[in-house]
Image (tube, rainbow, N blue to C red; front, top):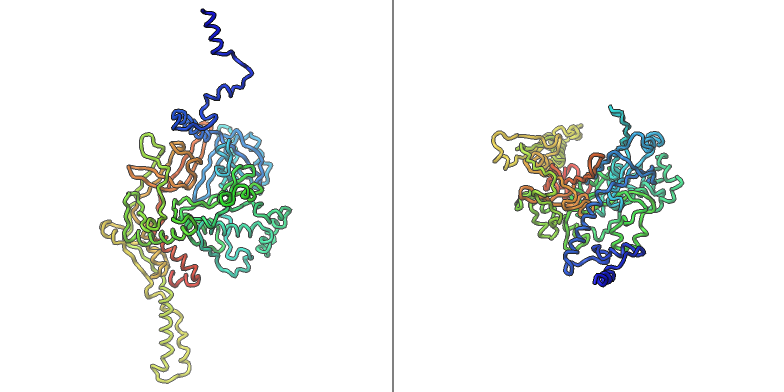
Length: 606
């Protein structure tokens, strides 16, 4: 009987076979090895599959990053290893910074200190997910400071401080007549009304053409021989193709661009200064990505969506370069799905800024923001974000701040100049009256009387309607007897113009009592940076039962030898400096400026 049992057991459990592949033996035990499990058929396997996938994503951002250094032409130099600490920060509306600390005896420390000319640029890139390097998640910047230190304990370190590549937008000028030299500028100001992303794309492309294309660069530097070095260099013919430029704009489909219509106006201003306010007002941001030719993803996703992957690959950059992208994270949508939504958004937002916030400001959800009326009416109001951090014991919110700013000022005042039309009318009637003295008073024309009107040269200008005051009635009622009384809105300003109304409103707005909020959130609880949201995306966070929605203003990534990899995400800021009424007035000014540049200064708009 025992022999029979032993024989049957041998048939049921075959002996070990060392020639079989291990993966084949375990294949049935791996969740999702052959296909994704369906919750309807095998709910437990589906749960295990999704949980394992989530954990894989969480672990991917805990890897040690891929830190590389590039030379002045963005060619790879070396991969950094053994760093003592690393910190990177990306800011939505400004340039971020990175700091990498190396040991003093490291060969790279000696290289950057002694083997590179001080005039030559070095660049730094940090891929937080080294198993999947991509321009979308990469931090890139220029090394601007190298600090060689020796502390009191005798430890030598080399600190590399880099500024993010967004800094380039602060060093690109928007020419008034960009394709002509500055000595010859028939157009006094560059003005482009368009949906803000499309306008930024066109403006930046034309000015990059002025800088890099040799055909355009030589005429614009006709009196600047130092500017001929680049277009006359050995690589000049390559720059005839925009795909060889060191800085390239990301393609924006003008037909499907739903960002708000705005006006880009500049006269040799920096690109950052000319576009920061229109971009912020439209809920958009400008980012400068670092692209390497071995990246898998195409840096022109809208082009890839429009013409297909194969044709879009023909427009991939042919060198390591920077990609300037203009992204819309406002949450605004529209009924058409085309560029027309930007125009609808512009008018609806302007009506809300001018009427809703002043006539019937309703804040039903008590989040400190006036609920839109016209934007809902025209179907362009933003929808709630899908990523919401709830307040609670296991919340992903690290810290949140609620701030009350008190001490408003009751009265704002402008004093300085009368409106130009007042001075002109006053001058006309005075000089006309003097010229008529001979006929009206003397009854005859005497010698030397005819030129008496030239004696008046504006001596009585800026006397009538030269000052203007505005007292906030709500503050007069509720702030009490000890309220701050007065402030000057604009020294030497022009009173009784639309600009003076705007200045008074801005002064009144800045010295108001208001609430503001700022929060920091932890990565992976439950949303992941670079997977669920990116910089400038809209997220919601709960505080004391109230749901606030704002855009991500900064993402900070850091670690050292004593601290694990940590992400800190900042949502919003604690300064509410956007006055909706002022934005509405600026929108009217933009429309009027397009119609007539000459009447915008000192007449209707001051």
